[in-house]
Image (tube, rainbow, N blue to C red):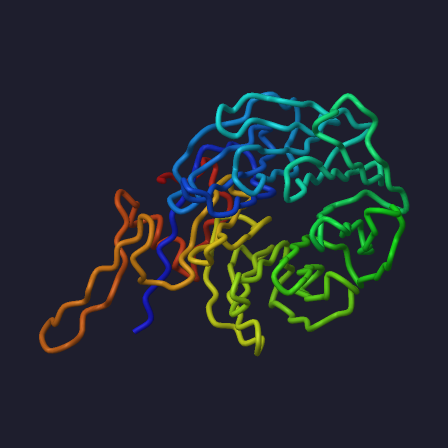
Amino acid sequence: MAMRQTPLTCSGHTRPVVDLAFSDITPYGYFLISACKDGKPMLRQGDTGDWIGTFLGHKGAVWGATLNRDATKAATAAADFTAKVWDAVSGDELITLAHKHIVKSVDFTEDSNYLLTGGQDKLLRIYDLSKPEAEPQVVSGHTSGIKKALWSSDDKQILSADDKTVRLWDRNTMTEVKAINVAMSVSSMEYVPEGEILVLTYGRTIAFHSAETLEQIKSFDAPATVNSASLHPEKEFLVAGGEDFKLYKYDYNTGEELESYKGHFGPIHCVRFSPDGELYASGSEDGTLRLWQTTVGKTYGLWKCVVPEEEGGELAKARVSLPGTAEEELEDLTSENSDSIYSSTPEVKA
């Protein structure tokens, strides 16, 4: 019998969660940062969802958040026309980078020395973090607000998306290498360095492209509008979430739907696999993040597998236990007929 998903729910935000990112695996484990319209990005332990701290200083919704590879620095993009760089160990604000419009995206180079930003003013900016007062390098060419901008190919190239266009840039010459147009507004973009894969979502489509040429590799269609998708580090699975509150897991090679379940009490805005591939995180309009097991029933983090016992000659239902998880909340989530939509207060636990 298939075991049911038992998510860890991370509360604390008071508005929709719109972006999340994991660090690489560090000597202290791995970490998760979330961006929220409440203007208070949060840092958590990645495998348990335990709250570590909140970065205080933005005066508007935070649209983008990221960690550098070893989780010593964080960067955030906000509606207050700034991007900020933070010490992710102490929580201190290190640098504020003023922009001329809302900032939507931030991304560190692998060495953490440069920060790439993009936003509503249609410009890409590259800041040398050792000289934050210096003017950034500016790349123009987008014709509408930039939704996401990411370093690629060992920081030699940049991938960026506006409304319906994805562009590839050469960092040295600051020129456009290639651009592709998609049928509907781009809702998310993920760069997978192993294999140089770009994951795009637009409308109901999840598309995979070469990050080096932008040539399409394959695409799948989901049953509802997709806001975000993430590819498993081993490229076995992908997960996606969107407007129907559900999470979908697909076989990357065949496109077969492997699992789907109601994931939140509102539309899902962001979903990402952890660096070890053991779990994925989702963020929603309902104000919560949830952590989900890639392999249900495995003992990992706070999940403890309960071995089924014989009952009257029949095998009991295998299940996963979580410390302090509200049963009724899990029943709500797993009930396909639940009429609950937006939860007025974030759910509890973790």
